[in-house]
Length: 489
Image (cartoon, rainbow, N blue to C red):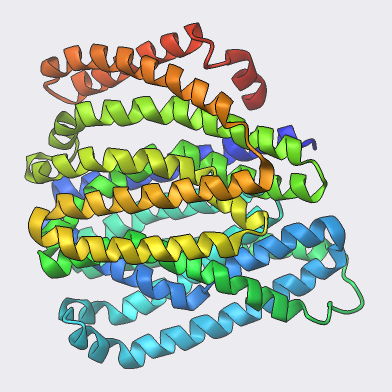
């Protein structure tokens, strides 16, 4: 299968899986916010998930991405080493998860009291199960990316998303409250991990050739490369989770619910970029390893141009429709989230650019560079949150994320340019045209907004904006319909 065919198949699989996952998650959010939970309960659930997200770093470190990187590399240069990579990384992961889970069960309660978050204590056991399940699911998902078979990653996402909706809803409706919702997350993630393990073993591991012996320093290389990846992932989790934790500690769990709504909207909008970035990341490393740097540079440039074409107008549109969207989708109880959604619009744009940039650096051997800037920005985000939340509340937390993530994303773009030599003059010309398209689309949507009175008219206004964007993008020549059609065919 050619590179273009694999990329096309991978993007469609991941994007399709992301759509199913996001739709399932969206239905779950609406069900929880409008029917099953109060804003306080919804905030408490997300406060617990944020805390568990931080602890999960220690259960996996950078092993999943490190294993994926060496699977990709050895698949090209020494396929017989791949089984050793899988076995040794999996054993290391089991040990890590076992140590962390044991530590949580023994030390969880005193640490929660010491940190001033006793509300986490009732969730220690279920939370430890979540960490273990999440660690294994993350590992197998990364392996599929390393094998350049991200279709299976998409399968895991679908399994997680659909089963999460079912199990969370059932457990909450049975009267188990926030703990039941968390248990639903555990079951869904564990189910995905089991599916991933079975597929990796049957479809990949058993069919791999195996060298007589592993390279002498293989385990050392796996662990050494996981160090910068751990720093990057730790900083990423700190950057994305600590703000919700600080909102809960410095304000209240209800405010966490408002903040989470805004972040989940941004995650939903970022799905296309995430799917494409996840798919092209190993391809960039593969092309450069094969001394085809020009092809890698062109692939990244075109990806970046299409991200700008899609997300600059999307950000403008989201700012315009934020109020009616929150009012009619999540309910009037969540209207305090409107300004947070609007501020987070800036985050959506830089996040989309980063989705097609940052993972590629790991496969280009620049994980250390990314780790350094990510760590610096995570610390900066933490400090900014401490400064801005007491003054501006939840909006301050959103602003801190936008500022620090912008610096991080621009740094990653610089790093990838060092590796590939990207034609940014072409990107700049595209961006100028996209801004004109955005202005035209925004004018039309702005006229339609006052007539929005419910979900039907809201989707009508959004559809009108998409139609205007599509026409202007095609007429300006920015959107090449034939190129997109060939890619998706």
